[in-house]
Length: 247
Ligand code: ZN
Image (tube, rainbow, N blue to C red):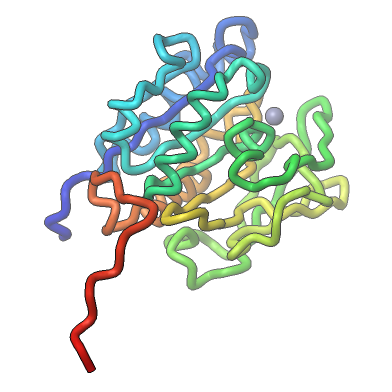
């Protein structure tokens, strides 16, 4: 329908569980990044993947400059992400690049830097997982488009409140777990010119990124965090006002 160019999406994954844990290897033979890329294949996205163990930790400046929306999945190697990499991603977000932070990415240097908080939360990794019900609490939001009022993730890691984040601009999803906990599982933020979406379902030992509702949320999140004005250009974070005509 739209004549616009495909959204240039880079899916970054720490990709360490996949190297060590046979359960994760079995669920995600292509890696978590590969499963998300496959899930999003029918969207009008130009998808690339990047991982921590690649040169420049997978995210050289040239790739970031060519990225409209970055997805971030990390867990056990947050501390290995170099501050210089975090610096350049932060600057791209402030200039208008979209960012979708997934699951344990809440504790990444990047997310904590952008939030200005520790982003701690309550959690439980129960054997077999918890049932999670993801409720749409902002049905008019573009990220909720095409989703039922509630969908279930049969086996999930519980992420609960209090979630140490600044007040989100919007809470699109709230989750309930079989233990009775609740969590702001889909939140939006703006930083500089950039839009950020955090979405929590996605624990590595459960096949959550094979769930079509979860993938739909992520795809919608990519489209929402992509902004027409970013248009591939690095926008200056300040500018001189043009001279106004004399009154
Ligand atoms: Zn997890």
